[in-house]
Structure formats: C-alpha cells, structure tokens
Image 1 (cartoon, rainbow, N blue to C red):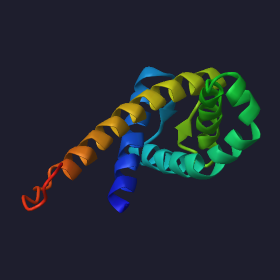
Image 2: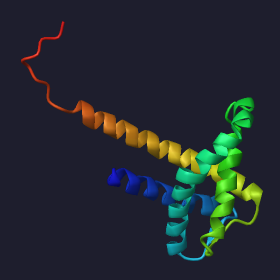
Image 3: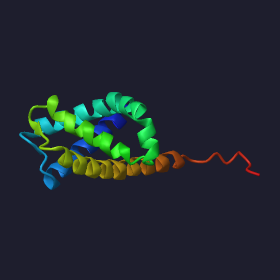
Image 4: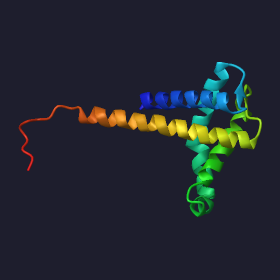
Length: 131
C-alpha cells in the first residue's frame, strides 16, 4: 500500500515536471514541485470526489468530459497551498491537466500490467486437476 502511494506520488512528480516543460506552468525549486505533487494527491483524494458529486449531472451530460474541467480547477488551486508553484491562467491549467491525465494514465497502466504479471508468475500446484 505504501509502495503504491509512493509510486503514485513519483508519477505525479514526473507528470508535473513534464507539464512545466510544455506549458507556462512553472516552479521555483524542485522542492516546490514535490510539494505540489503531494498537494495534488490530497486534492484528488478529498476535493475531487466532492466536486464530481456536485457536478454529476454535468459530468453525465458531457459523457465524462467535464472531468477534465474539474482536473483543471484542482490544478489551478494548487498554487494557493504551494507558493513556489505557479499556474498563470485557467487555460494553462486545462492543458496541464490534460497532459497530467495522459501521463498518469500511461504509468498507471504500466503499474497494473506489472502487478498482473507478478500475480500470474506464481508456480502452479501440479496436484490440482483442471477439468
């Protein structure tokens, strides 16, 4: 459990680093990037489900595309708690949330493939007869 949490945090750090290289979003020091990833994890765990609940009709009406707006709102609010992390505008937050969603989806898919491979790698018991 703790390893998955650290893995997710590292994926967010890498994703935020890529976002800062592609978009106008910036940070002052690497420490600010690490804190921003941690704050983003907390926001995604606590605030995002509340926002999704209150905007559920809009999320359903747009077939889930409104979740990108919710992600942008969350990314736009991160500089309020991390002073060294800067998001210049909502459009930058929107593009950054799209990139961050893509990066986390890729790494999460990799994590799931590794865990499935690990589960299937157990030796079989030859005493069991499969019919």
